Image: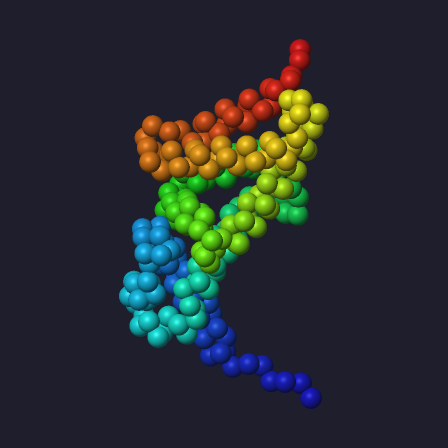
Length: 205
């Protein structure tokens, strides 16, 4: 005997619940950018989202859980854009440059991640393990891109793993300078120049 189809009202309720969760995550992301994780209360998130604090706790049991889900959603959006044209393949250096250019269009997102990354340096921060893993994955992905394009053309003694850490340092450093002085720092242009330097390394006519 087959089970009857679920009433459509249930499906609509699930859809509304998912949309509400996404709305809360976006509100929390904005507040984390403005005030940092420690300076943002659940009450503030609830108020801006148009909920009571008890209503917010129905979706997220605590602030740590809310933070992790905010970061996971942000990474999903980044990864989806990065691999839109080549799912399942390592990112290329050109795709990293496209991501840098895309980030210029969303300063609020970049600011949030920059603030949260800095805050996570404390041992008791709930996102510390998340960012440690995130940077590890990013280094591995950048190393794969460097090996694919520049294998054998890095300076003597510089491995793809070394170069990937330097590449990420350039990306993060440019982001911070751009956030402080967006009219003076051409983040995409400077990153493209850095990639050109890598590509020209050890080239011989």
